[in-house]
Image 1 (cartoon, helix red, strand yellow):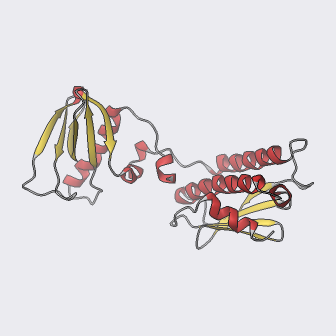
Image 2: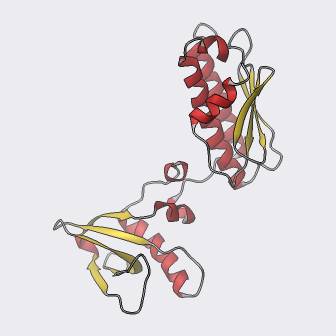
Amino acid sequence: MEGVQRLVARSVEKMLDALAAVAVRGRMGEEVPTINLSLHLAQGVRLSGVLLDYLPREAILLASTRDGVLSRNETVTYVAFSSVVAVTVESPSVLNQVPFLVRPALSREDLLKHAERLARELAEQFWPSQSQLGGKPMSFEVDWVELDTEPGRRALEDALNVTAHALRLMGKEQNGLEGIRRISQVKFARGRQMAAALEGGIGKVSIDPSSPMPSAQAFRKGLSAGL
């Protein structure tokens, strides 16, 4: 889900342009993902197939598939661009491989500001009369070793958001407010997996950019286990 959340809105025209560029690279011999589309036409018709080519603002060339695989015997369909009102991408994960369609990773400076804002919002939510939790300032600290890369920063952003959500879930539980106020700091660092734990009042979140992001519930369990 986190990959889908990184996508940005583009016009149908510009989105098809970007995807067609990927298809062209495939025809040149580069290994690229197959782009399966469904075109929704103004007449209420839906056409599905693999994107072969796109002539900007004029025509779209689709090929039908059998079990998701192209063959020489499949049919092709030429579609007038003016008749298309919407496009569905059957496997949205392929869009993450098209930079034009994905929100850029936050910079190091932006992530530090984001971490500070999340910690401040938690303090204001669970101790509204002060910007403190249990008398100790809540802070998110980042160890940047092996994280200051685009994949690392993306994973860190996800980890910050999931951790903040997990802490909010903790705070809403019975006796959760007391527990969350015992956490004075959360540290984020490169690790071998995506996981959260609590040691001596300090939350520790390990980040592996190549691993899937766990749910907020999983992080909540990891952080509350040490209370």
